[in-house]
Length: 390
Image (tube, rainbow, N blue to C red; front, top):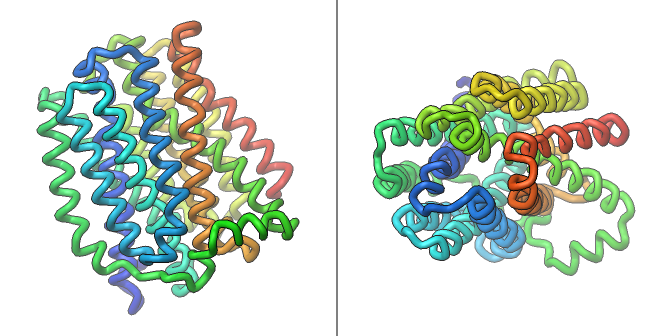
């Protein structure tokens, strides 16, 4: 952990690491227990997909508002307010038995997550520039590590048959207490690099600057695909295992733990791998591994195949979002603030797009076949990396 100790900026770096980790933990404390949410509410898979749609829709709203909120209040208040809203939303969703209330509460959680996501990534990109060395992959590695913790606690809670409300409310309170000192120590950004550009100014730049249009288009399409490549294996393997592979909900939640563990390990090594082999090679290799994991994990009717597949997908997909945040934030035509907002907002649009497809396709072809949308997205992303980024 020398990268956290070797600079006067170390307290700010550590605060970012804690914030990233807590954000991942709250999300996967909820996602890993989706089979229990389904059982508690007495709903089918298409309805569960619409709940996933609600949190993604809220995330789009939060990400879209984030640049304006940061311009007025700065990244620290944006990140802090988002964290509180996210924790409160999932806590409310866990204590109610009303599908309608769950949808509203989880949408509020999505808004909070969108604000926190943009705020902490904009702060991280600017902080990395000040340090003069890469840290973004490792910060996202802390996000994966926090997500792994959240999924692990969720799996244990499911195995112990701990009520969903007790688990989520208690875990969220712990996360809030842990985040308070970290949020107060975050590096503040108040528009040194275009974080607060007015919305019309950004639209005018898109119209008048061809280089910005090209960068935004390429990155935006890759972000859409990354949302599908990461979103499907992060949310749906426990549901697949519980519904089509005959696995108990506690053991099914282990799939989320394996996915996140593989992703955390890959991200912790990501900065070193990129420095040694280059961004293109790391992205290409990772995407190829993710595609193979999807084809095997969702295509072979065996619980073991699902577990092995999510490990491959976790390790392979791990590099995409950190690289895209870096490419957008360091592009002179975009900048850190707009870059973080672009990646977060478009990513959440991607998270909106595929749940309705799952709701439509699953009754016709089954969940395993439907989840191959991840492999299709991976192949499309590989094509773009080969033709546009190499």
